[in-house]
Image (tube, rainbow, N blue to C red; front, side):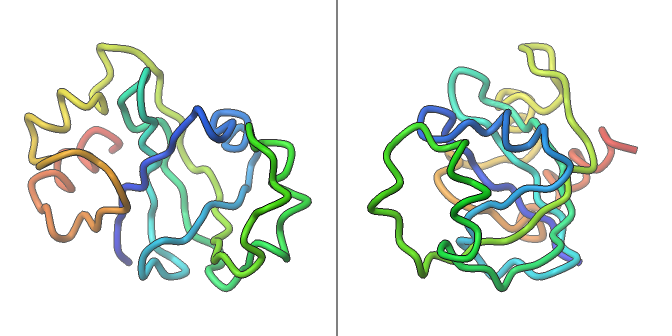
Length: 138
């Protein structure tokens, strides 16, 4: 099992609405595998991890799940890439949003996060950050 942080832009997608569902779909932009854990990091204005998810499937394409995700897009989906890869995830934890969150950008930065979260990040490459995040959950 590998752990990942995936950033999410709430201006383009209703991330909160999508992850309020027990299971949802998310673009797969890394070598994530079934059984991995994905932490969803909300971009500004939140700037924090908001969800922990288990990866259920990784073999989906945009054309196979478009109808399920269409309600969450905040832009026209007519030009969506039907071959874009998606994963199906189950939300296992929701974290309170706010400045005092242990999952805020500031706290993540102080505990091993380097640079900005512009794409998926494998936590095995940042052991201090992984230990910090997992320690906050247990």
